[in-house]
Length: 429
Image (tube, rainbow, N blue to C red; front, side, top):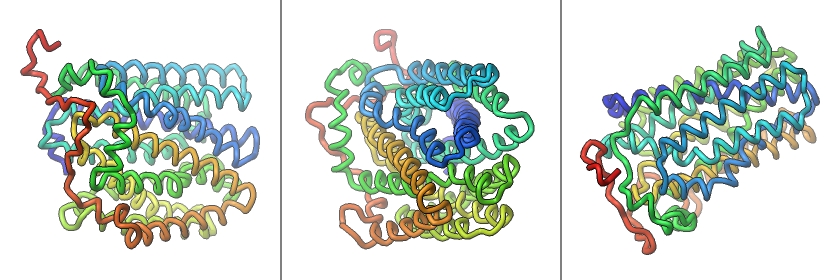
């Protein structure tokens, strides 16, 4: 699983991506946290998450087309620079005591726009910085760094919020998001799409990504795994905010502890995933991940104290990493190069849409039926989803995750070869 680390450019890119994603979660935690303190409503916490993810979902089709037609590296570089400047703007607004919930939501949405434009290109860059032989390793490591940052970032951010407050958290985001900008300037890709792929107007049709997703063995199931994880599992990262404030009354310190548990679990899941991939198929890992996710989420829902809840979040972190990594990395591995950006835009749209939907629905449900009941219901539905995907419709069964990829013809799109950057002539540039 670690073969891709032999390539220096990929290591630089991966390091920059991890630092940027970690810093980004400082803002992603601080915005809903201060909104909850201002409004006292779990629904506002859900809106904060939705504000950052809905733009990613809406822009997904267009961003996927861009990923197949333009210089992905430059696109990601400029969009992450924009993301950094938005974090600086939020920091300035907070220091100036402009604490309007709507202003914070608007700035969070700007972050979502930058992410929405760049995310398919960012995921496709994995293939540009690692040779085809190491793609499976690179895809898994890229997903792992994202999920590790997802857990580690909020854990550290909770400590920063406790000791130094939201302004420092926003400032950290401003600085750390620049890491990937530096990495993209320093590291050069191993592969780059042939010029025909970038110049073809027909290659930008989002419908081709949908067609490929529906027709390629395993990809549809993998995207479904991402959908279930995003809708039912991801809201745990917003629930720790409301649990620390309303249920356990432990404030920023309790929030840091709960996020630390998630981070420890995510890190523990990395060697578990590597060992499991050598012994069993992806379908088995996904099944165990869903069931384990449901059980540990239920334990979190009934935990009486911050300490016991933190112990439960360790398990939640493990199974969260397993489920999301299997879904996202399977899409990367099974997709052919000529349509990668468009299919990844489908995956990104499903993921971000499910996160936004899950955040909004579970936030509203928490206000109506209570936090514990909402999390308990999500836990039950995760187990139900595991059973349905194991024994349900043949086209969506988890066993499809183990199928080899089939090349699905896309008549309107030429299939360009990927040319090693070192071999490209001046006329190719």
